[in-house]
Length: 247
Image (cartoon, rainbow, N blue to C red):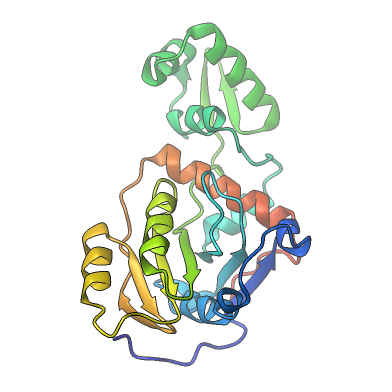
């Protein structure tokens, strides 16, 4: 069981999405009571020593985790300073990720890489260049330097006692989150089955504020990581104050 440590109160920067403020998502009171525990666990994630931003009920590329946690990085700060709007369409993120940040690639090369037709690839690339996501260089395109994955994304799901359902949701978040986990208020006396399944799936499992299985970071394609990062950027742009790294 994970050793409990005190998390400085100013380490965790919390954001609440307009969806959360509007109360559009029903959640049992007992699960909402676990949210302070989610924030505490977020403050003890790898890389969180310089601060971590957490977003409740953040719409992701697929699903709506109870909490998304992102340890603060210079790349996140750089992306938030960019004028380029978030790329929330999968085709946009995929094309941007297919471009290099240093070597211009022709439309024909990009179309071949992405298995798309040349004309639609050209139209999309030119539109993304107008938004600042891509830069046109002669006959090719490069991706803007600030358009990179912003760091590790952790998706956390709270469950009172439905650990199996929670693991199923956490597994779905694995399509875009670097790591995901379920946090439960209670488990059966013999919780070896829950621990074993979480370990097999590479998912985190916490009983209250203690990790039984730490979430495992996945190897996701650049396009998936970039796309997920852009959803975080969109959520942060809809909230305030700005993200500030602690030094």
